[in-house]
Length: 115
Ligand SMILES: [Zn+2]
Ligand SMILES: [Zn+2]
Image (cartoon, rainbow, N blue to C red; front, top):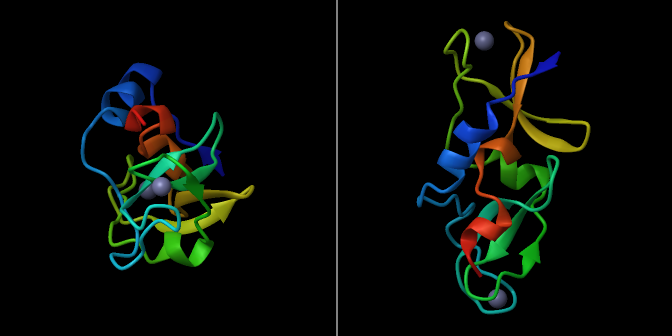
């Protein structure tokens, strides 16, 4: 299984895109009772849900990731990919093409939230 990686300039472009992934609609941050946004929380593949008011991180469990109301299509065969965990990182996997994309690569970096 190979990791599908995008060019850093392309990643930086969509990491600044203003649409946020919030997870479950009824989930609010424990600290400020407000919206959480999924972000890449450090270099590598780790993903957290950060409070949009104060920036505090919360954990995303695998079930939250699998229930996200979004799909990712394989960059090669264009079929819908499976949400799976690879080496502790949440990923979208295409078993047909034997490749995966890290969810972290598709999300804003925590610092892109500007909090
Ligand atoms: Zn907060
Ligand atoms: Zn594919």
